[in-house]
Structure formats: structure tokens, C-alpha cells
Length: 101
Image (cartoon, rainbow, N blue to C red; front, top):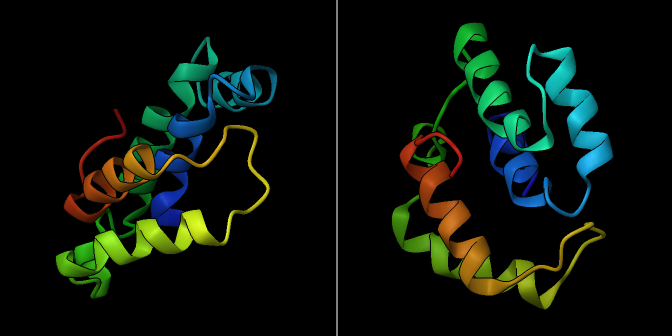
């Protein structure tokens, strides 16, 4: 789940499991709490002209289920456990270019 365009979604996904680290990120961007990190990174990406959606870089929507399955089959080090439904929802929002939620 790498990529600069996906960092806001990943930060939002993990903010409750890594509150100190993400609160630092949020404060650096003008926020106050860990939950602010994802939306603030999203706005930074927008301001920098970074693609905001997986669709913009060629990912087909049909591939989201497979991507979620692969993330769960090959878990990576992450402060929050990798849960398939949550990862699938994260990928859908990232594919659409929607703000992390």
C-alpha cells in the first residue's frame, strides 16, 4: 500500500494505533491530533499536484479485491492489524481519490 498518493489513507488507517507518531505529522502540517494527519497529508498531496486517485495511475477498480486479498495474505509491518474489510474500504477511497475517512 505504498505510494505518495496513498500515504494519507495509510496514515488515517493507522492513526489510532500510532497516535504519537501521527500526532507529530499532524502538528507539522498545522493539525493538533493524530486523526488530522491523513486529511492534512491528503490536502498537501492535492496542493503538490500529486495524483489523488489510484484510478488516475491506471489501477482498475476490478483489481481492488485482489489488492486487498494480497495485503492480507502478505501482511506487512503495520501498527494496526491488517483487516481485509478495512483495507478494501481504504483502497476504494484511494481508487476514487476521496479524502481519507
